[in-house]
Image (cartoon, rainbow, N blue to C red; front, top):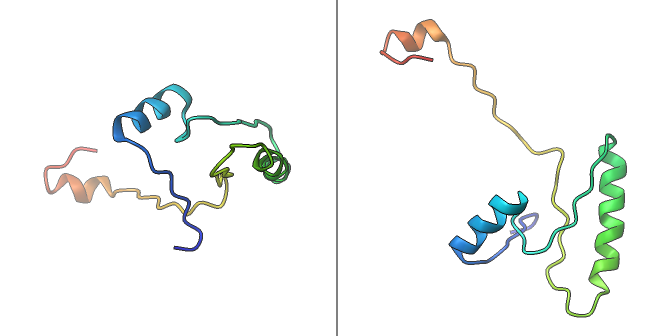
Length: 86
């Protein structure tokens, strides 16, 4: 599907990678800073260089902004009528 980035691995291996590094990859480059636009630009530059490395496969830049979110704020009184404590 267009826009979907897949990372195929074994379940236990994926869990260990995520726990150790916070990413779903065996090798990752992390950038930090306060300007998301600049971080995205630099991430794409780094990915371009990494794609030229012999043996590099499936080089991907994770999307860090613009991810849709669903924010749910329960009505405490309404859910309490059903015995749900929030």
